[in-house]
Image (cartoon, rainbow, N blue to C red; front, side, top):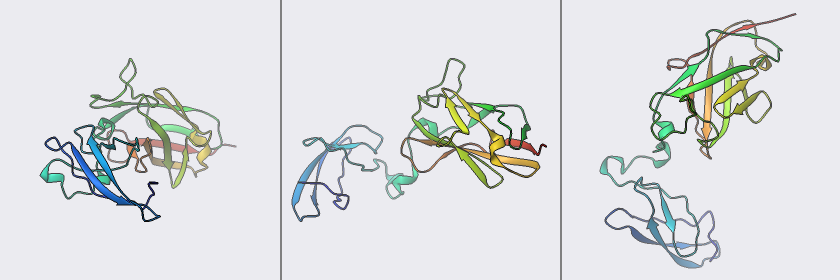
Length: 202
């Protein structure tokens, strides 16, 4: 049978019952059974063993999380720590300049996180898909040429933001894998607070 996006079902699997079956119906009305096997203890990893389909399922093994929206939780270590920023503040930025400002981050708790030899967060090693820098209501990110990832260093052309003269508090958002929700590496109130003194030239 062909599994479609509308074919859904509920499987309950845990350490005491690591295999569970669900019955689903595809768009053509065909009914089939999928045998689900537990592949880790995080509650987020179930796979259909026979056909090789990998399904995006979620679940929890402890009572306190049983009724929590699973999409708001992550067990990945990168989500569970704060980050300190390696930069001099305030950062002096000139509008329209091609100057590159480098940023490096250290996780407060690096357990389970890929870091370089000096303990800085490794963007490539941690499956970072995008980094966005927001300042004064304007953003630039790694989908363009103004924000570039170089292993554990973030190189940002802040002069491309086109802001008025003033002092701004910015936000650096890091997206991991296919997660649509970012990790805030720097922002107001955090250990890493990006302060920028933006100046016009010419």
